[in-house]
Image: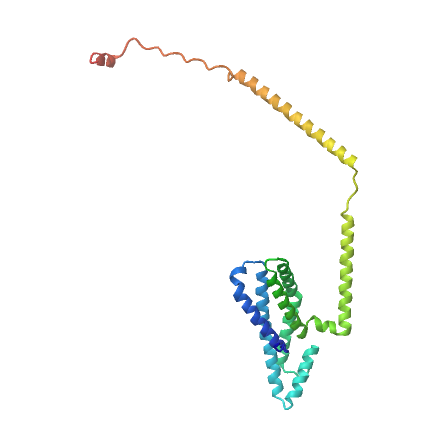
Length: 264
């Protein structure tokens, strides 16, 4: 039998947090140095923080509605106001502060973090070795995005009539400008058509220039070698070394020589 699906955002986030905790415990030692592990760690931490803030919001709504006589009607009104995104004039300051915190978290995730997570997990799916892990993370990210839409994300803005149309119009204009700018850059980078004859002439000219440089360097080396040989001959470096004159031995000695000569 199929298990009942969670209905409230807190129940859905609790299920997601438990699944991410098990995934972290199972794969930390093997994949903690991978590039995609940083995105997974961010997903795990941000989901836990969002769960805490959503539970705080539900608790504030519950106790603020229970203090009045008609608790059931006020809970429905607060939930309707939460779905529409309005703060409500009859709300307490605690409910208003908790709702603003959740909205800030949702906006931060959708604008800055979710696109990076999607890119990292899609690259993991492309890897055949760990494609199963990537598919699991992509499914979890889809569940998180569904919760964000329920809490007032991009889904609520698209559901509104005028706001969604204006956003789509601005996005289409931005895409058109980017496409036109990319086309202009491509046209500017095409360059000019060059014939084979021109290329052959350029190569011949380069070969002639290199040949001239090679001949010039050989000629210069030869000239320097002749000059060094002449200088060495002038200095006497190229001739054989002269024999040293023999030292003339003295026929006579001094008094000490005469003294020791008789002892030997």
